[in-house]
Image 1 (cartoon, one colour):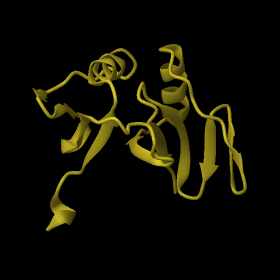
Image 2: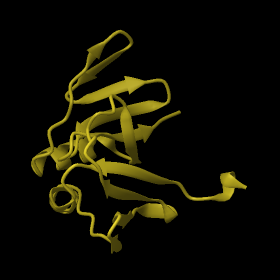
Image 3: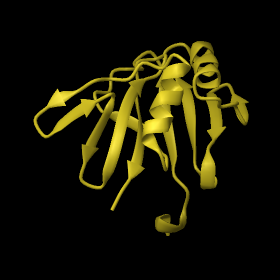
Length: 126
């Protein structure tokens, strides 16, 4: 059953080499497998993501992948120190303050990777 399986995100890249460098330098990820079709990364608890080359990277208007963290404030601070630029939003029902939005179920922030894809960090709360 799929409820027993780990989840893997797939992320497009218009420049795969640039994306590999960015995910290493900004997020600290090292590829666990590289193929002609893309690069696989492993995250915590059996999860991971795959970056593949395509000319339409960065066109999705929504979050493509989120990282769950126990402390989103520290995570945002640490990523900013590495040069990650966070999105700031002022939308009906969602406004960021210091790059973090509070919403039912938690708090989160969003940034774009080197390819323009929206990536999130999220802290779940009761």
